[in-house]
Image (tube, rainbow, N blue to C red; front, top):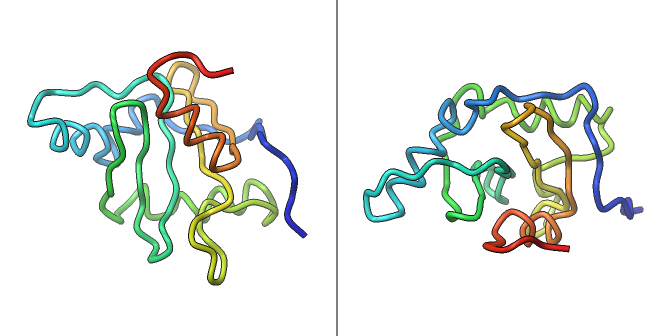
Length: 129
C-alpha cells in the first residue's frame, strides 16, 4: 500500500552544506546554463531514475549526475534512515520514484517530499503554497 505522506522529515539525516559541489551538481548546472557559473539555491533535490541514474533538481534546472561516491550511496542511506519505508529510487516498473530527497543547504537538513509536490517546490521561480 502506498504511503499517503506528502512530506517526511528526516530528523537524523543530514547532508553537508556543500553537497551540491561534492556530487557535481553545481558543475552540471553551470554546464547546462551556457557556461555561466550557477550557484545552487538553498534547496536542491536528488532522486534516481529508473536506470539508477542520479538526478539533481533545483530552480535553475535538472541535471543527470555521475554515479560516484558520495552520491552512489545516497539511496541506500535514505532507505536505511527510513527503515525501508521510503526510497528515492523507482520500484519495479514504476516510471519514477514516489519521493525525492530535498536538501536544505542552510542547516544541512533533509526531508522526503512526494515527487510531484517536491518537483513543483524545487523548480518554482516564485514561492509555492
